[in-house]
Length: 230
Image 1 (cartoon, rainbow, N blue to C red):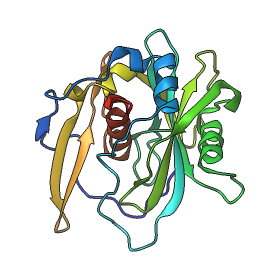
Image 2: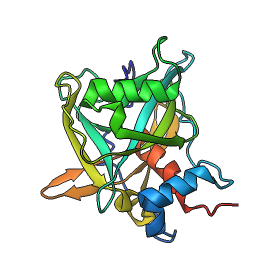
Image 3: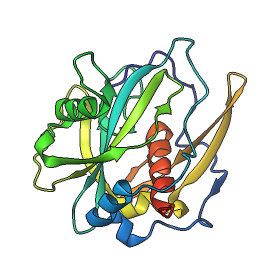
Image 4: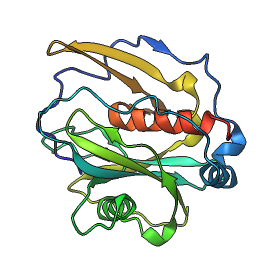
């Protein structure tokens, strides 16, 4: 998991929603299926990420990190997410993609994402079919995050590391790939305007508030999948 030394002192979940993007098209259903995802990564379009760098919160050079954007190949595909444990000193209780900083022994960003996913949620790398990577996302807290997109076998057996992960859950891929569910927020903090996306999801009686880095990476996945191949 990431270690953060400084985070904004405001409530993201209760901040004002400035707008939603229902005017944008949702990703076509066939592109959310395993075959469509494989084809899109094999023949990628010309596109630009919408979110790539947050205003810095630290003067330190960013550290390389990776996260796994895992699409579980269910009849209706889902995204694998985690809820950080409440006792963590920073970003406790927030929703995240499995991942963390790249270690020297990691061969590359993919190896780091798979290792961290195994350590955090017990994912066997044999159950992950890596499709490719999204552009690096630089967080305000000092990480250069490479999102690694993979298809996950629903037969996988997961076991959350109780020190880092309170819950492992899934959200329908169609929900986060529909911009009508993308909310825009902004706040003036420490003299600087900070903007972010959120993608709230009502999971039964529980509201899952997806925001910040996780929502930014998923927004970029939306931009990638909604762009037609050249």
